[in-house]
Image (cartoon, rainbow over all chains, first blue to last red):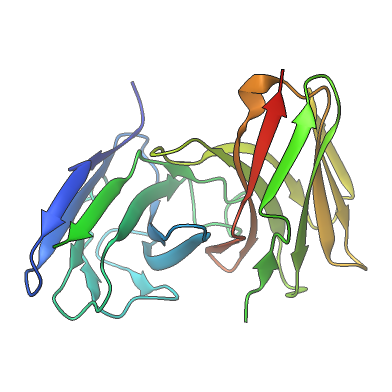
Length: 117
Length: 110
């Protein structure tokens, strides 16, 4: 089945620790994205990548880092510099960069819920 | 400043009736507008889209209307079904980025 796989589904972290969320896609999509959702709010863009070895900051990139060494993979690291990391994190992909190649339809994974203890 | 707003946090309708979800935006540079549906603890799934050069797009029970002069779009679901109960997000696309509203929780009562 083609799709996006995020792991882990649930993650607990102590303050001061870095954690890495995994995102893998087998849709052969060029573009990948990381969003954060807080209760009662919409999705806010953290980072996005159009091609391998290239990525751009979104609206709330501070305290996060990413890499794009393979087309299929776009891991997100939540660093200790992120002041309020408890949230639901969503990875998405699209055929091309949203609005540049096509309508920008995003395919989402099932999400990872991070809780800081 | 929030560029995409969904002013109604929740909407409740009777099964078989029409559901109308609204979305307002401020940036006239948006190229596409999309609606996504989301169930709890899952990722959103794409529902329907519309280009900024169109004013209507229909797909089965779902129709999206775009009023560019008012910077307003709406999603109509007719007839509404209990399985439509979910959170609906409006999203606007420009220059590689999608900007989302805060969502509207739709409840369809049997």
